[in-house]
Image 1 (tube, rainbow, N blue to C red):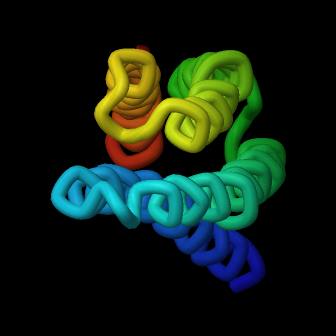
Image 2: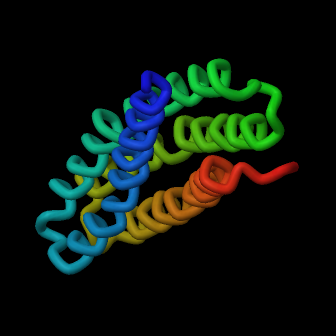
Length: 149
């Protein structure tokens, strides 16, 4: 029973983290149609990223490691693969995505929605954000399928 509750928490954290991330595209789409609200949209994305998605990813790691040690082995190949993908995900998010969001808001405030500088930083943040879904999908695959690697 305790393991099932831990797994339930783990799944809820995954839904929270990935679900929050998926909304970023919706926020960006709304901003594209209403440039006057784009600064608010970016602040909303940054808030969700910093205060909802990222803490949920941290709790995913904690609950996932507890389950790995409790029920499986930390050396199980699909668990190792998921951990490697997680490290890649967090590394890219910290090194590139979070700074890109900060830069995007700064350039929007400084140069405006129609500036070439803003379009460039917006494109970079979008590409990085979409790219981050590759390791997320890989982790989800490992967790659901538990492939024999």
